[in-house]
Image (cartoon, rainbow, N blue to C red):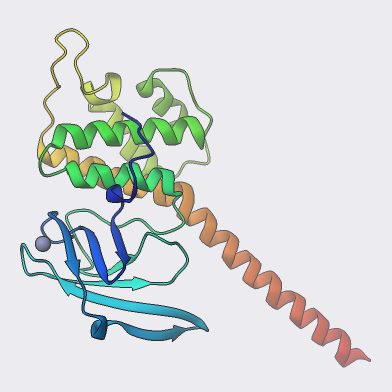
Length: 233
Ligand SMILES: [Zn+2]
């Protein structure tokens, strides 16, 4: 299930060759639309060139506005609508995890089961690769992580709920005895997406932001130290 080489189709939004491709944040339908070049606005954000692209979804006619900060080749940030049936991941989340997440987004509507199964696989992947917790039983691995003192209570809470979802945490979504898929309700699958978003944010985005804040402060402190020395001369 953890096919990480699924290609860019699995990603949220691609904007290239004047075309916008991805899952509509309003209706979750996959769309591929040509964007009129005249609708591209080039602007500067603290010296960094950004492009703003907008188009409406062919299925629901909802407006989608993307901002392209040119940091990553593929992923663009949706700045409108602010709230969607799923939430876009910040670029700090490694691409390998983003692919799985957006695949789960894409399967949410046609198959909540498949979506839940992908999220389960993604959670296992993050626990194994990022947290080095790996003993072949997801429910136990989750319990291990929850017991760590550096995990905030809102993440512990979410993961504990996941663990208590029983079927999903203890077994793969495919039932071992019958080979059938264990039932997953649509609301359960969207709850899982939300849980995963928060977990990825905590694991990758917040540490990166904290590091950046620290570096900015160090830079400023270094500068004021230098200025202080010069004043003493
Ligand atoms: Zn739409």
